[in-house]
Amino acid sequence: MVPPSGHRLLLASALGILAFHCFSRGQKNSTLIFMKENTIRNCSCSADVQDCDYSLANLLCSCQTILPLALEQTSYSDHLTIWFTDAWALGLLLNFTLVRDLKLSLCGTSTLPTEYLAICGLKRLRVNTEARHPSPEQSLLIYSGGESEPREQPVWFPGCMYVSFLDMTLFNRKSSLKAYSIENVASIANNFPYFSYFETFPILSNKSYVVTFIY
Ligand SMILES: *[C@@H]1O[C@H](CO)[C@@H](O)[C@H](O)[C@H]1NC(C)=O
Ligand SMILES: *[C@@H]1O[C@H](CO)[C@@H](O)[C@H](O)[C@H]1NC(C)=O
Ligand SMILES: *[C@@H]1O[C@H](CO)[C@@H](O)[C@H](O)[C@H]1NC(C)=O
Ligand SMILES: *[C@@H]1O[C@H](CO)[C@@H](O)[C@H](O)[C@H]1NC(C)=O
Image 1 (tube, rainbow, N blue to C red):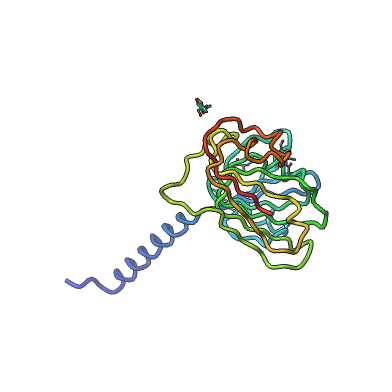
Image 2 (cartoon, rainbow, N blue to C red):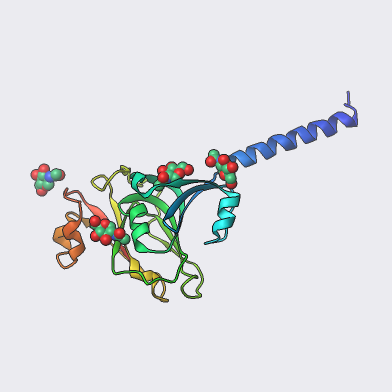
């Protein structure tokens, strides 16, 4: 028996609604953290927001203010976007944190100091310095790994095998983003005696690391 066309229409729209639900559930929100006038906002956004558009982010995303003193060591297994204006706030948020996919957008014109930011497990980095000088967004793939992906521990560095050092002065320059990696580094401090940064670096175990410098 052929069902009347009205039923078919109903069925079709029911399927359509179902498909829409599956689609929107499959879409994950992304995390955006931004700092403005000593306030740090942590947002969950379902839509893409144009870099450094604070009011649009407040409008479109679901944001919470976090107090700098209440910042905890966190890890980001997904995509994280940070809009920042100075090294201090960025260090507070990111130094010694596990992040896989990171986008950093400089939203001011200040000159950044010669400091390094240590990031664990970074796979992909995107950088936008448009606020300082007109240039297209740059992107860098640090490692691509599916199966052989290390199982990092999210807190501090003893469990982190992929360590990236990001030279903060890269935001001051117009030159393109560069990186080099050194594999099988057993002890960071012994391998880079002239890199004074490691004197304060909390890695002391002798397992092998992949160390990447981004500059
Ligand atoms: C920001 O919020 C996400 C959840 O949306 C959470 O996983 C993360 O730890 C938060 N980050 C900070 C610095 O509070
Ligand atoms: C996703 O983001 C929207 C705002 O863009 C927000 O209303 C919603 O609560 C967020 N969902 C989750 C799971 O955080
Ligand atoms: C990250 O931490 C190291 C070690 O404490 C410090 O030397 C460095 O300046 C920090 N980087 C930033 C950008 O705050
Ligand atoms: C470091 O390596 C030595 C041998 O090269 C080993 O005896 C020692 O247990 C290792 N220490 C750690 C913390 O893995």
